[in-house]
Length: 345
Image 1: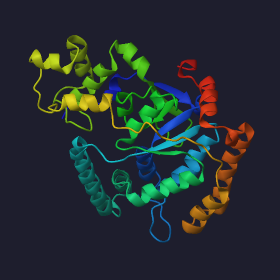
Image 2 (image 1 turned 120 degrees about the vertical axis):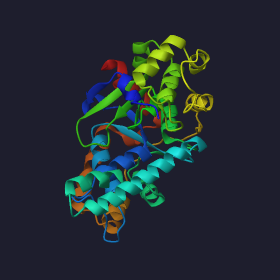
Image 3 (image 1 turned 180 degrees about the vertical axis):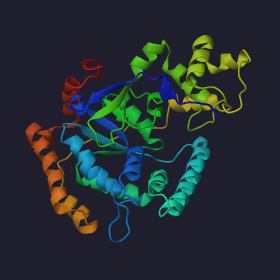
């Protein structure tokens, strides 16, 4: 496999949540759910569950962490994955094997070394259909719009942002930039007040490259769709691309072996023209308090007092700004006036 992480060459900024007030953020839903499932756990690594054994860590993340951000004036669009590309199957198989290994290590170490066991417990997190459907149900009750992608959720989220229907994409994966997201925010699932933000325009300008060049750099070091070239990290890959311009010319100059990048032309095209839905609907609604309470408190045994407090924050924010009466076009116009990236980068 290639070496390093493309994040090493991306200029980063750190912003407070107040800088994001008025922003519309398209969330890579699976990615955020994984983060919730990994981090919201009991001290021994066990995920939160109701008395019927149904995992609720992700629901806790949505009702407490997501609504905290909504109360700060942020509007979310949750974008869910569809069918993965065939080229990703190898990576998905490796990830499944890695999670299974982590699960076995966690179970073995729970009584021996709780601290080490917790590390493996976090790595064993998985998202199944039941988790996805319960997350969608809660989000819909909260009035948060959901967009279903035909394939990669981060590609659909990037398309939504590139089209101007969102200011940023929230994901841990840098692939969002390769798919054309103008701005990527990382660590939004973590409970703190500052986040990492990366601008695609600034990245390209800093290195004097094109998006196609950046995609080629990523392919050389490895993506979800290919292994990359052993021994080539981000800095070396960037140097090669800046010198030769593209992978084809690097190969022609016989500077690299093509093992690990055999499908580079297909992968490049996948990033440049991903499979997305163009006719999606984005509409925010007031939260349905009775449905949220019934779903979380009656079905999944959440604390009614805590859920009511979470709901009161977003209802208060919505009332203060009269958001419930605005359509998506008016929201987009208002948000673009308040939260343009150039205002604070």
